[in-house]
Image 1 (cartoon, rainbow, N blue to C red):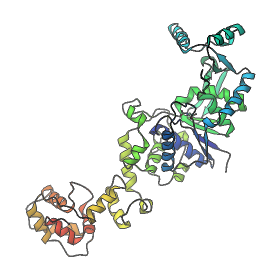
Image 2 (cartoon, rainbow, N blue to C red; image 1 turned 30 degrees about the horizontal axis):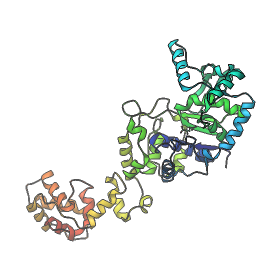
Image 3 (cartoon, rainbow, N blue to C red; image 1 turned 120 degrees about the vertical axis):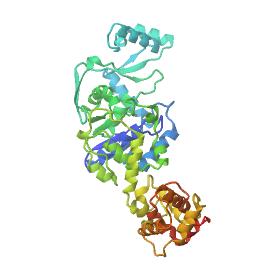
Image 4 (spheres, rainbow, N blue to C red; image 1 turned 180 degrees about the vertical axis):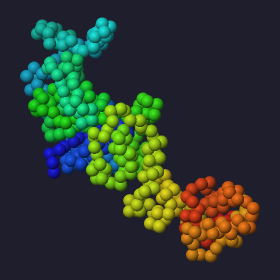
Length: 440
Ligand code: GLU
């Protein structure tokens, strides 16, 4: 085992959607590829918005996707540790108390914007005298706290975006503790990444600016930073992240019959220079991982494309991969899979073939005649063609006029797998009765 360790750090403030699933997939695959570990960290410092049901759903989805974790942590259980680090950073002058109200900050922000200047906090709090602070405290104001950035360049080599440069002068000191004493995301995340020995952080590019500030936190705490990879965010078809996409739940996709490995295969290759192909196990998908193949532009995520890919995925699945989930036998699976969009549809066609149906009689005369021409068993995939050849010599009907009534009588469905495939499973007796209009 290498010393590589990654983490997936969801906030349990919503359902697992396609965007954070993609982050989880990339982290997991990188750990697997490099022989490292995967930590699941629940970022639940926001007590008001964090919900147990969201957390359970996240775990559920990860398990279903096969993204198992080696270790688990929860930020709400680590507050004592965060307080300890904060005390040290306060002593070192890297964390300072601020007394501005939200309204005052907003006024300052607007003023700067009106002057055409970036809305960067002016560090007014560092100029407060003891008397100012005493006055604020007497007024009942509670401080919030900021992390003080040191001047200079902040640079890193991003596994996706290449060399990145920031000037600390263009960044505001991030607020790390709210007035009510609760922690914001930035610092706890860094403390955890240091304490848990995280070596690589893959997350969305919406975190790039956070990373710049966090690099100084990493340096203050550990003298070095992990390796970063910022993934271009997914966009919707229309160019911006649609509401549906932002909230497109993996649970819904699962309920609609999208395969776990189809989702992982799709997300791992979307926006890369590689073709999206089915991978039937996560290990081979991990071996194929190459973050340098990710483009810089935001990939479009199209739910319809995923569904189409899912059909392709299902159609190449071996019986071994579905045997535990379906009641059909190997020969049936192999026969019908080429026509399925979801695995579970195999059950539907199994029922059509083996359980009683009420035939739909579109042309009773035609199908009754066809019934009398059914060949003797044993039947194979050639039977249908031979039988139809015979039927055609007894009627002028052809094309849809001929095939559709036969299909409706045999299956009571408008469309489906080819009849030459279904017919041997339906068998002569049932086929005969159905063609004659009897329940069978
Ligand atoms: N909880 C944070 C989020 O969901 C984690 C970000 C990170 O990976 O550092 O955005």
